[in-house]
Length: 442
Image 1 (cartoon, rainbow, N blue to C red):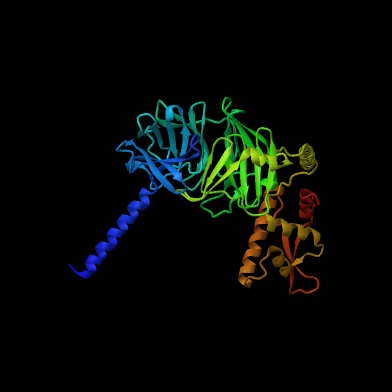
Image 2 (cartoon, helix red, strand yellow; image 1 turned 90 degrees about the vertical axis):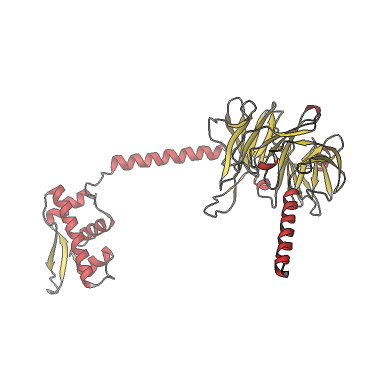
């Protein structure tokens, strides 16, 4: 075997080995354990349940069983949403795929429970559990921002759509979105959106809404405080009660139910979000590495002790603006009515060039020269033959329209100039001047 062939096989083997491990490193389901205050994970390919003993140090707790067909349909890297249940059971919903997995804490068995055969529509969606029902609201995918509201139907093993009775936010993605158990409302606003296909700049929606699950309706609560909406490098976490917005030197703690905002400032840039964020239930655990590395803990009660209230999170637009808008609308309707009633509509259907020429002929008591007519019609830059052709064409059309309505033939006439017999002047016949002037309200 030649040295080049052996070298090629070695490189190919290394690529396959690295590809396998790159894929394998993504086949894990990670969650935060409330009792041990640390992370746990399921390594699907190794079929083990692991716990993070120290930052970046994972040890096996037990072996697990994984359905053989489960691995065949998993994406290369998994971004799971987890929901802890009784008896150590856990539900996982894989972002952007519609796939749902169930882990039995007693039998240590991991299986896929849905029958979804499509993916990609809800990356970055708000996935939450309400009254033991799993929901997925919004997200992005297929070159579009979504505001689809879906729920997981246990009997059908499929995601079903919720029919909404009115319009709500433009999108539900990377904004202030989350379900509040205390109010039984889903909140959404401040989402990002843009036109993928037209390279449109990303915009933020200022409106803030709540969704009623019983009425299937959106309610506009108001416009979000611009100070919060325009904060730089914003990252938002929903704790179930508060929105916590990380923004470098500033952190905002927001209560959408009470419509309150609290601001926490620091002299150094330490309010930075992390790739992995877990909430339990009033504490945020921020991990800077999916596999290990440093961790920072944010206690919401402790933050509120040093926070400063800065007002409302959202406000309805001023009623004064509403009344001004009504007054402006009434004035516009009045002007329109006046124009319709007091101003007679012209009978002549003249385009812009024809109308300009007729008005100029009415104003020119001595008539218009050929040069002046050309300038009015905007054809003075064309060659002589084209000027003549276009000029005669417009005059012929005007004469025909006036003849059809007022029975006056050749209302535009050409006569020799009294000053220079070599020049011609265009003018309206006297009887034509009278009817045209009346038609145009001149």
